[in-house]
Length: 159
Image 1 (cartoon, rainbow, N blue to C red):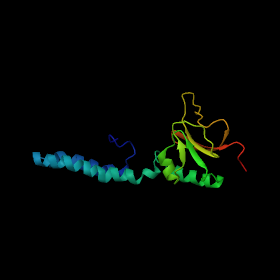
Image 2: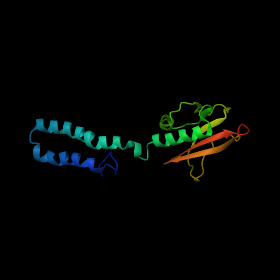
Image 3: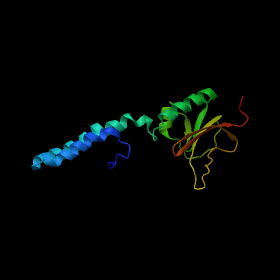
């Protein structure tokens, strides 16, 4: 495992490991040491950093794929026009869904919109915190690693 890069670096780590291994054999002067110290992070960026950035969409931390799924589900429900958020909603999910709804992150007012999107997090008892007021009924749950996104509809406004 390479520090700061996690356990899934793939074959790209070979380039960085090769430069790190050759350093003690090729560096003999203070000027070469300075050059080596400047070169090693660049090689790490060009190999491991590039590999990680190209694979970001497939990683467990990416929300772009989940955002596309959310958008398709919201379109099927007809909820994209009258959707608001309540509490904190992950911005990467909204960007992946190509949404920019109005919202109340600090929970200052009661929502009046037909559709409500909010994020729930597991508590110590493994139950989920309910951010939606009681007049909202859950219509969709989108689970991603460590997060749960819920779309609720205001009671009495359905078809």
